[in-house]
Image (cartoon, rainbow, N blue to C red; front, side):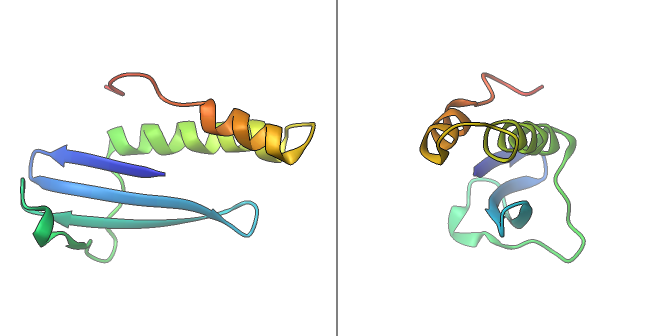
Amino acid sequence: MLIVHAGGDGDYVLVHSWIEGDMADLAIYSGPAGRPDALRPGRAGLAPCVWEAAVLAHERDAYSRHVLDGTGPLAERLTAWGADTVAGDVR
């Protein structure tokens, strides 16, 4: 999953992926507003903001519901997970 967030203090890009079944990996990049060429890995300890965390929480719930707890063929569970998106502004 990719989150692109134009924050008040700069731009943020979060790259979230599922690894080893139920473990997640998250990389956060940040940089000055409007300067995608200046994005760099975020500082140690940087965590998602409250709005980004809402999207990550939806992703966790959808992944758990459709993939980990779902029934039926894996391809169908993955399709259902991919269709379970956040609509509109999370604020």
